Every structure is written in C-alpha cells, then in structure tokens.
Image (cartoon, rainbow, N blue to C red; front, side, top):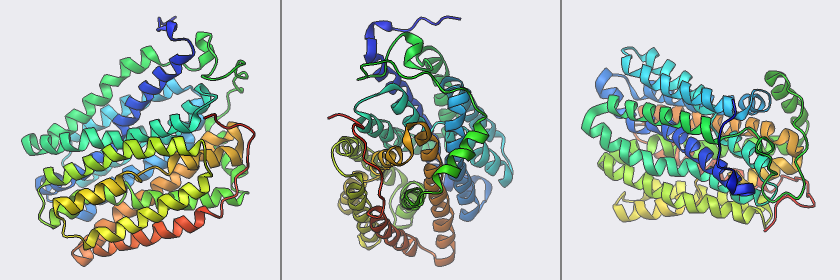
Length: 422
C-alpha cells in the first residue's frame, strides 16, 4: 500500500526522518532511565532490597546494549521501519504488563528482559544506521543530535516521572512510559520510509544516488560475521574497552544511582531529579557540539579530553557538600560530557571498519557500553549494601574514566578522503 508522505521537502526530508528517530530514541532513553525513579517506590511497595531492584535495572541495561548489533543487522534485512515498530510495541506491552507484577522475577522479566530487548532495538545503532543511510555530509553533527536524544529523554522524563511517582506511585509512572511508546507507533508507520530511494530521493548532501541495497542476509549470521572481521583489529578492542568504561561511568552509575545517592545525603527526590534534568539539558548541547567537533578534529584527542574530564568530575562529586550550588556545578560540568563520546566513537568505527560493517560493528561496541553500564548498575547497588554508601563506587568509576582517556590515544583509525563536510 502506498503511503502519502510530505515530498515537497526534497532532500531535506532526511531531517524529518531524524526528527522521528530522535523522538523514538528519546522515548527509549526515558524508559531506560525510569528505574532510577522507581527503585525506591518498588522497594517500599514490595519489600525488595536494593540489590534486587538494581539487578533488574542492570539486566535491562545489559540487554539494551547486547541487542544492538543484532538489531543493526535486522534493520538491514528486515527493515528499519518494521524493526522500530516491533520494538515500540514490545516496549509498551512490557511496561503495561509490569503493572500486574507481584514477585521479584516479574520485575526482572518485564523491566529487565522485555524492556531491555525492546529498547535495545531503538538505541545508538539506529542513530548510526539512519545517519549513514540518509546523510552523505554532516554525519558527525547528525549523530551528535541523535545521541543527544538520550540526554533529552532524561531531561523530559526524569523530573516528570519523579512528580508522577510522588502523586500516584510507581503504577502511574509505568502507564505514562507505556502510553508514550504506544503513541509513536502511528508516527513511525506514516513518516519513516525505508530508504531515500523509496521516495525518489538521494541522501542529504549526495550528488549521486546511493548504491543499491545489499542483498538481505540472515541477521544473526551477518552480526556474528561482522564481529569476526572486526575482532581481528586492535582498534575494535580499544573502542570496546573505552565504551565499556563510558557505560560504567554514565547511565549505569550516575543514571541509575545518582537519585539514590542524593537521597542518602538528605536531598528530596524532586531536587535530585532536577539535578539530572540540568545534566541532561547541558548534555543536549555538549553532545551536539561534540558532533560538530568530530567533523573537524581528531576524534581520538576528543575522546581523551572527554574521558579525562569525566573521571575528574566523578572523583569530585562524593567530596562535595551536596548543596544545590555544588550539585549544579557538577551537573553542568558532567552534563556537557555525558555521552559526548558517541560521535567520535562512531567516526572511528566508520573509519576502521567501512560503511557497510560500521553500524553492526558499532552495535557490538555499544554492547560493550551497556555491559559496562549494567556492571555499574549492579556494582554500585551492591557496594551501597556492603559499604553503606556510594563513595567507593564513584571513586572507582572516576579512575576507570582516566584509564579510558589513555586508551583513546592508542586507537589508530583510518583516514578517509571525505567523511563529512563542514
């Protein structure tokens, strides 16, 4: 069936596609950040311990990353549009189902396994796939914008969900997230074509038509084969290691436990949520600016700077007085650097592995990110139970970020004649 789409935009239709994907990535980020608001309400409602609720969050984060390379391969064989629609339905259905849970394994099954699988198909790999397919120029900037959706998801969802949790408890938060995902299904169905050629267009900035799509392959075989080719290069392991640390120091630690850490220090949940929102607001600019810088400067040096500054900020936080002023300084400084690492990492992956394999290989690298995040989500919760505070968890994370800064300079990459234009 032919679908009437706004064709008058011409090549600029690529930006409408970016807008649709941005909103979907935002919804997935909001769902993944929801456990940071729900940890305490779940514990109060069901009597579950922090390590149990943290385990569910960790599984969701881990699957969010592990699904990435297979989702990227699935997009090439099954289609981006179909993959995205199925993921939105799964996200919405899983969160709705969690309103019926009564046992801890229900929490792990819904907020851990099912939402992890659904949101994992709407992750950074989708941004990389869309960028490579719809844009011939300005790829760093576009990837920066799509990556910033994670921060914007935090910016919009965390304060709102914190207020909803206080008003109606965790079920109201759950229904809000479920309905937000469901509302995107008709938008994606109408506005997202599979390729520019489906509308008689070329990628934005291209002067000639894109080559024909490669023949469909088995997604599992393609994902594993791409990993086999990439794993023979040292660059893959350096990128994997640095992105593991990226996840360990961002959504796994700060995204999952900062609210609880602030609560331990006597701050109200709405105040702590405001700190996360401020962080998300500044990351919107920081990550977009990182995309702009990635189009122009050595991405390895950018990663060195980002990881080094992040490590210093994480070591600084536990020694503040947790006043609104000191937390605001941390939020601005850390927020500008939250996921600014993504555009340089995508560029290095494209340089090292080529445009055909890059989205899938980046999916494997992003799986490392979420593995690191899952490790931090559980590790910090376990440390909180064992030590009675989060001090050592944040110090350890800061040290790993400094290590990542050093590893970034070991990445070689491969210069291309033209990757993106200014």
